[in-house]
Length: 357
Image (cartoon, rainbow, N blue to C red; front, side, top):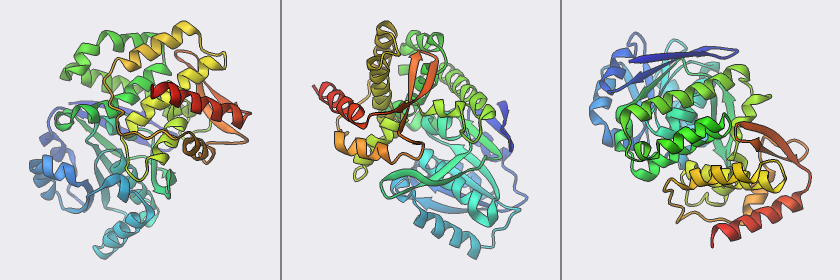
């Protein structure tokens, strides 16, 4: 077991890196009651781990379709259940699942009695490298992702490698998009290191993956420590995400993998950085080659320029215009406020036409 601690302006968060799920239950205190918000897939795939949690004074609320149920109505249902069962401020919420579950559980924990203890057990690569760090919680509202939410850190996060064994290739790549993003906004050396490790990553060599997860978490933790409330540097973590949230909005009736939308969003951000004269041709080509080197399946993703553009206009990070994170160079992100909606919309149309050829 290895531990990492990062401090925000509000809290200290302990992150434990573990090999086996059995180690987690040993670390969860059983002095008070725990309310577990659980992804049904985790229940089906890791039943022995759930049995261990049952011995820890746990109540369970099982979520069948996390992204569809990530809304205020589900929150109210959970809060009503907790109230009926007599949960109070000395108890804890435990989120067990992917990013949708940890977002939802964190928001419930931040809202119930104005905040109770929260423990995260992320089970997907995406949740481990992204959703578990930074204190962002939230639920969707209509077609807008994470429109209602709060900043609320967990007290502890348990990162366990055993959960990753149950992911299929596309679920694994779903999380790997965030590892790629952290490298793109940090340094060219980090990105080139991923290229050299492509074979090991695709074959999921455990030691390599654990090292990359820890490095990715450390990158995000350092940024969050400096800017917990997303007033400055933390906005760089949205690289590719403004485009991605637009893509997810037009696919809301048949939800797609978040990381796949982010990968397309990063390709769009790279192209737009080059088109606007910020990113050099060589760096643009290197970055796109590495991103395209991983075998993402975009078959069922719908790309509609008008829908993407309209969703981007509603992004909560916008100010006077649509705010984008672009690159001056690999490892040099900056905030670009697009002054012309027409330019951006025409770019999206062109990108989609080229992408679908």
